[in-house]
Image: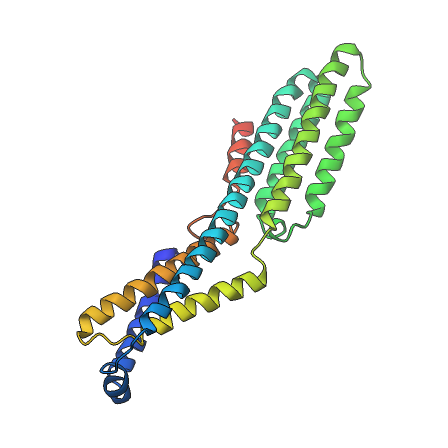
Length: 251
């Protein structure tokens, strides 16, 4: 379900609640016609605190998203660079390195992000990387020219491990539960209290409260999407880069 579908469903629910409240006799007699005094002034700090909290969370989630994207891009770039260097390792060793790179990409694509989202290491990927490390180490023991190329390949392999570690780290970082609950609580306050303001014109009242509710829920939806970048949504990181590399290897 995309962001717009979520907002549409939310608006349907909000419209139903708005209708029930405004057809209630108690609301029309006790709240709509009541003198609110300084109550509207107390509503502003709630909106301000929600805005500050949401801005802080979005900034942190956006930073994490960018770091995760960079880690994936760098990992794929290092794999591709290692693939190019394998051309200098001889037919046997180079062919084995190419196959292991293809196997690694295949594991990432096949398993998707269900392991990465929890920061766990895939046993299948670990096995492929272990074989790749052993192959490169064996290549480094050969004659001088191949030794130089293998040394560069080992450095590239170290980069792959670093970027993979970064990918697992940033993909498993999520908003703390206490912060999520505070955000939900402040959003609920912002939306529910707006329904208590008495505006005699029902259409103006609906436009006013619906705008607040839609904006608050949209901000929450964006934050949730950014907090889970490996799940389908507005910000969804896929395995497309690995698929493209694997496709180029087959050409």
